[in-house]
Amino acid sequence: MRLTEFTELMNAQFGVQTADSILTDHVLIEFGGRTGAQAIEDGRDPRTVWVAICRDFDVPFAALRTISDRADDAAHVDFMRFVDQVASRYSAAILEAYFESL
Image (cartoon, rainbow, N blue to C red):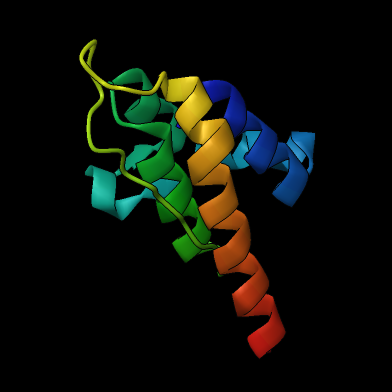
């Protein structure tokens, strides 16, 4: 997860002021008592920080991942084309099926 995406999720869920406060003041036990900001600064993936914050604040979340066969220069499809033509469609279908089941 990119830091910009993490920031957008935090701001959308908590509002800018509260998100900033949570990130700098809330201690995350699973990161050795560091705050989210400290964990990210120390090189932790923002996705793992997001998941920890969601758990601590009872925010429901889900993560969908689509894995391509190859992710190197020998891949037969460009990564962004893969995201556009394959991953986004699978993700949309999974979410549609989930919401229809509710």
